[in-house]
Length: 388
Image (cartoon, rainbow, N blue to C red; front, side, top):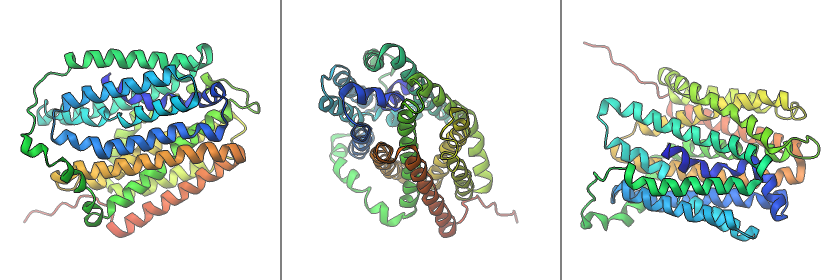
């Protein structure tokens, strides 16, 4: 539940972005700056704050960063103008570090044989938080207004901040002060890994494109469905987002499949399926019932591509995985920020046709990068040497 609540905050705006734009009297293009700065601030926060988890108590940091999220949400909820709302969203993004600290915190408290189960549970919490945020925000905004969404979110976060000191046992021992002083060196040590592990750049770029087109698609979809042309409410946008629930069931199975054939080969096959799905966005754009087909395909395949990309560096030496993950996530959220801007801007200028073409083009680029990675690094399938 903790992971779900702290993750959900960045996704409430997806189905209600049109209502928020109308509430502040800004254009479809201008409203894109809100999720864009949120994602970019999150990337900066991960780069600067996540390494603190190797020096200080994950419990203390989680509590501190959750309080920062509360401050951002409160500012968004009471903001009288667009500038303060954007500032609150940016602050919220900078402190959204708890979802990345909690797995490390949990891993220190379970025996190795339960680590997979606990990690899967936390991942399910992330997906559940995204699902509830996108479905719930659409329904609540339709009947009670978009500000009610943020009043509910703020209340949930304040309650979580109060509860965290009680539900997170104080069991960690912080590193000595001598070690704590090496924080800057730890952050800077991320950059040489870009040269020694160049594949992380390709995997990060693949996920940046995938995450960026995911955000661009859903922001444009919310504007498209609530436009006079389509005439639906934000609740319908939320209901459509419920398709993401299927990924909770399919992603683990696709991950097992990637284990068998290799993550890079699996990622390429999945990218081809995703490109076929996005090709349907333009011809099916005039019917919500037909739109369910490409939405179902992309919602199923997208998370599995992410899993394949993570597998390419989580097999590296243990001492490198946290920093490689930091690089990967930072690149991913930079892509999310770009997708937020381009998604709303392209829709504002060229409508659904422009959005569908742009998403298909980005998907083709993603597929080309997957093919390049497979060519350069092989499939990644484990080779078992024969005995004797």
